Image 1 (cartoon, one colour):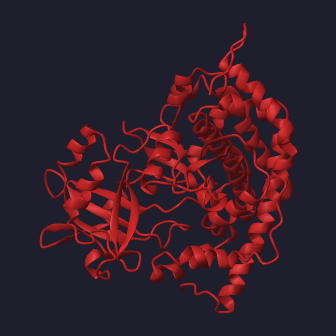
Image 2: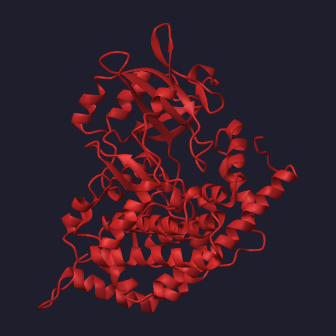
Image 3: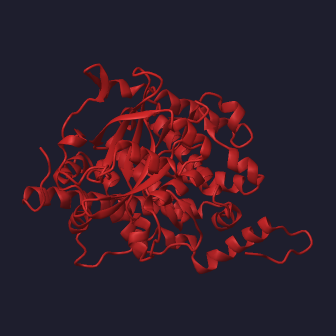
Length: 463
């Protein structure tokens, strides 16, 4: 897209003006509205339909995990919220979005340089969509999680406003920064002053340090998954959470007539030549199906164990099924191509630094084509324990997540357009806060609907 450049004008300033003009077509206050559902819209039916394409024996486990709390339900209900968002008013400003930007999908992980960074860490639903969909999901998750840790309604409102304000402030700041400064900005939790000094204020750096106190220390979780059989490393099984490929029905596993070497070789083709060379020096020795997350339970997910120079040097890959994003499913748009490639592309756009082994692989299993994305497993990841936070730390965590989300959106470009739309006032903050409370109530209703469906025997949850 090109614009006529008048004296003193820049492409950035023109985009900012367009963003202000966009308020006339989609007033920011309209984003507060939660569109009503049709009378026959059944959230449980939506979940059941979504589960129909998943591994049947794992679906009860998915429902069990969603029933642990309203927040757990929210984590597994990305499709429900996307349907509601698609039904309502959205801006026309689209970027690469996470699609599932709730509080638990942020955390600390190890970069390629083996530094610990804070960022979004789940991209199953990433796609191009209205920027505020991510902000709404993050804000709503704060209301729901805030209730579960005992915050009052006024405290919930305050923390949501703080995080949305941080998102708006960060977007407006990024809109003025050089493009390369935005692209290379990241939250290095080991060297905060160096990496974010020019991009945040002193109070924000203090917030980050508060959050880091609540981070579960990264550890080598792989040592709990490796056992030894006949002197060789093997994956320790724990059905139904970890099941050896040999114990799965024929034709339903990852290999589908291939060898593990074939699988790794096919996936490696999506990597850069240097990564292909490094990976070729590892030998795959075992694989298993593994259950992960809440919303992902029932999708096909596997781990592959590889060894390096000797059997003591172990290395894991996670191979996770990628299906159509909830953004695509609910907006009626047609996606053409590999969903595994979609996830990889979106993650590389949004994350400041991505897994060097991030790639994709498509396979024909059980007579059906499946798309997978691949990343390193057990790469020193760490999460924040939301349940143990007080109001102050919870608010700090919200600000950090909001900043990371703004930076992720900024990497898509068009930040001046978003900044112009958001403006310097708090109209957008008010709209997001109002929507978050409205959707938190909707989430509670849907959670109770699933509880009733289990009690009535309509669906089965694992015990």
